[in-house]
Amino acid sequence: MDPNAPAFDPDAAEFVPDGYDFAPAPAPVAAAPAPAPAAGGLFAASLAGKPATVDPHAARLAAMAAEFSKPAPAPAPAPAAAAPAPAAAAPAPAPTPAPAPAPTPAPAPAPAPAPKPAAAAPAPAPAAAAAAAASSAADADETSSSLTKEEVDAKLAECDPRDHVNVVFMGHVDAGKSTLSGNILFLTGMVDQRTIDKFTREAKAKNRESWFLAYIMDTDEQEREKGKTVEVGRAPFETENRRFTVLDAPGHKSFVPNMIQGASQADIGVLVISARKGEFEAGFDKGGQTREHAQLAKTLGVKELIVAVNKMDDPTVEWGEERFDEIKTALAPFLKQSGFSKKRIRYIPISGLTGANVKEPLASGVADWFSGPTLLQAFEDVKIPGRDPYSALRMPILDRFNERGTIAMGKVEAGILFEGQRIMVMPLRERCRVDKIFLDDETEISVAKPGENVRVRLKGVTDDDVMKGYVLCEPHAPVHAVTKFQAQLMLSNLDHKGIFTAGYKAIMHVHTADEEVSCDKIIAELNKKTGEVKGRVRFVRDGDLCTAVLSLTRRTCLEKYDDLQQLGRFTLRDEGRTIAVGKVIGLPKSELEG
Image 1: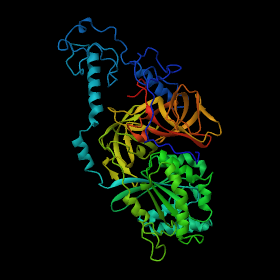
Image 2: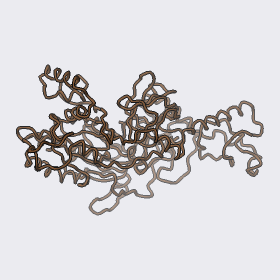
Image 3: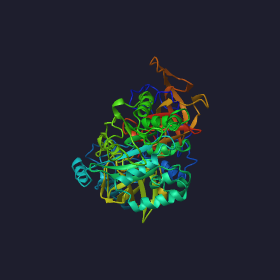
Image 4: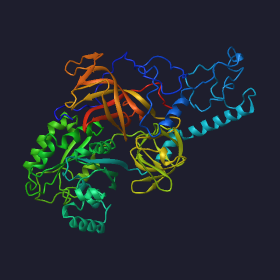
């Protein structure tokens, strides 16, 4: 990202030009006889999408799309008597029990259907009656997980009353993120002394004596050998008032996509800065990851930032106030430009290696110039915005594995998850049931509220049905699964290609998904200096703000940013650099949504 460019703030006022419609897709994906949806709206016309050439489940998705593209295969043979008859005279649905699979009636022109084909149809054929009864039972079963507010409240009463908070540690390579994360786990009792002694011996054998605490988070042997975090380390700890999960993000620029994955799940960002002479400058100058990590964190939804000025005990610093102020003075204008509110940034001097000012306050005479909280106290003090347990369930899948059954791992972003609940895996529309729910520390729970990191054992699906980037939801309120959408984009770091135009390809990182995306067309550009909106532009440049139609190579679960931020904000990366951040502002009406 351009270190001098202002960061895109998803919460800022947007511009959405009216009257722009989505260009027709180049070719329909499946059966041509699909009736066209009602005209009107931003994405009104045919959006059947492209064939998913790289999707391992392409055949299943194509078959599913073909099935959904024929909601009313035989409207013509409707009985003549049903047309003029009043509603009470004939329950119209009887002639059309065959296409039962669609639980929500499509906008197909059915002849005045009654609310539900319950039971008493005017003597249909026995097979048709059985199919209708089975469909009705399936519908009832499918919606059985829809709870009233009172029922949700009763479920929430089973949960731990303490909030769960995800904390992502980010910053330049060698800033001390893994060591700090490991020490927090030790100081909060999550790691015993025997384990620390073991890691101390292992680190000494590798001539890396000071890395022993990092071994708590860096469990991979390659990470320990090279001293570089590759994957996002995850570990739980708790205090009296809150439960936390540490997300230890890699600092090397080669692993920025992994850092994005960690930051996208975070409630609090900890920007770890090395106070050691020369190390802060290396991370903050062009080419360092301090700037990019901070900018990405803000655009990925991190509003609360703690700047942990680490290695204050280093001989080049010796807890000097002058060095602390120097770092603070350099960072403050940059963080403001990146979109962070001054009131939501805290600067805390620490030593991740010794644990000074991490859990216990500094001893008298060490840094009497600092009167702020310890790092863990700051974690307690940060206000976490309210989460909505009453909305539709949304849980993006971060990983999956098999342990006495298929287990999906992820964070509940909205709604609640509970044992016995009937849910659906999107975009495959595979229905299943919640068998068991576990927290990161293997504690079994019966209900998971929003914000919880959980592992869910599922019944009724196989490992192949559950993939990273898929989303767990409820059958009666499915997440959107689309191949095209409208986005608002803030472009940056385009010096390698110069312009962004139709045909530009990149990798989109959204919630836990990484998907190939291309620009179909640019709808409009906003001149940030004058506020003027220009339509029909052919290209935009570095630093421009625009709206565009983007096309995905396979169906991806999205929500509009205004409906659910966690599934509506994303980044675009190309050739190892972040070239855009954006938010979903329009979803098609004729895509497979449920």
